Length: 270
Ligand code: EPU
Image (cartoon, rainbow, N blue to C red):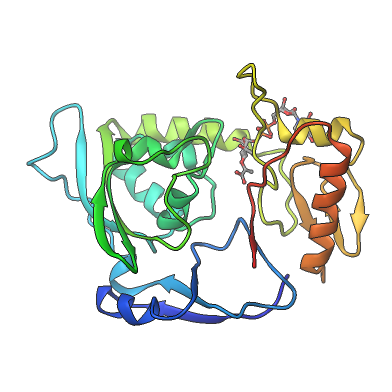
């Protein structure tokens, strides 16, 4: 759903400077994103080429028997394939993000996750490029939290070094299976993923966004061809031909009917 945009797929660092010389937005896997029906005036940067390369060799300078630090893994690498490789190698820490249809850079930028883990569980350091230049930071240098990396919006996570724990393929697979079971009740239709973050009360208690929307009686609510999923109320599904405006209307309905401040997990462009 949504409008059109001009996509710039970058093959390497040499193209970053020119790509960032005019207003731009950065696309990861696009799975948690709703683009306005009017389309975008900014160019959209995607990472390909050398940004989709994966170096999982352990760095002997940084690795110990308990901790394994990889070479650079590109921000444009699809997360599902990366997790499969890590599972085969018996490397643990990132398997809690199984099933998220992201690219690594996007998953890091929004600290994507499930109840079983998040992107920041497996990061040693990140290369971040912005119009001001290139910097390498560790997670400790970022104000990251639940579903948020603290990285500014126009900064690109170009590549990442993973911090993993040596395990076995069988144990990593077991954890992936456990996290996968939690998805069984999620809708099969096309969807931009979870709409809202799970809200945290001032007391520190975390509530389920899906549960709150469900308790407000909104499952099955429909605007145009978008619907709040009957299977799980934090998902808005496209029944076919939905517009971004339909989704915006459902988001507004949810906010007006749920008596808790609901923060979007979606990216809404523009
Ligand atoms: N629930 C309801 N009604 C609903 C939906 C959920 O009562 O319509 C109840 C469930 O029965 C359960 C509780 O709410 O007792 C929590 O639901 P669930 O186990 O589905 O987890 P969640 O917190 O809603 C999170 C992530 C999902 C991830 C799942 C599974 C967030 C906002 N959501 O959902 O992530 O897939 O755990 O690990 O953190 C995403 O980020 O895009 C996403 C879908």
